[in-house]
Amino acid sequence: MDLTGKQKRFLRALAVNLKPIVQVGKGGVSNEILTSIRLACDARELVKVQILQNSDLPAAELAEMIDEMGIDVIQIIGRNLVVFKVAAKKEHRKISEELKTLKGW
Image (tube, rainbow, N blue to C red; front, side):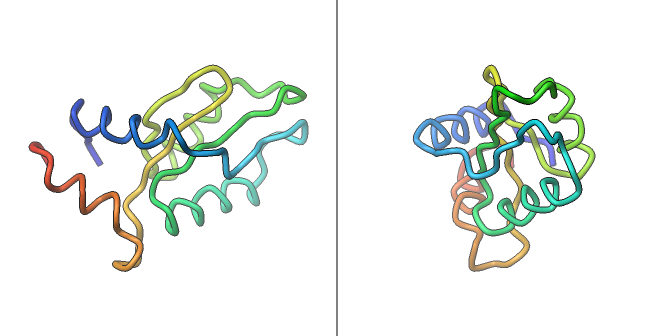
């Protein structure tokens, strides 16, 4: 999904107070971690992912993997990524409904 700059700013503002839900450790990225990112996005839409200090994985590489899954990477700051995906179930679509009110959706 293509997001406008205004929509990305809105999502970044919401993500400031989020705590990381998914953490990537020294084991790297496995299918389970990618699945947990996708499931978290389906439940919450906006998710913060943290790469722990003991991991050798660069944030840009993880962002590419997440992007290939069809999830938008909104922001990368250091070892933290903010990702967004419209929830599959209608009852979980709170943030995407607010995004629709912004111009450019």
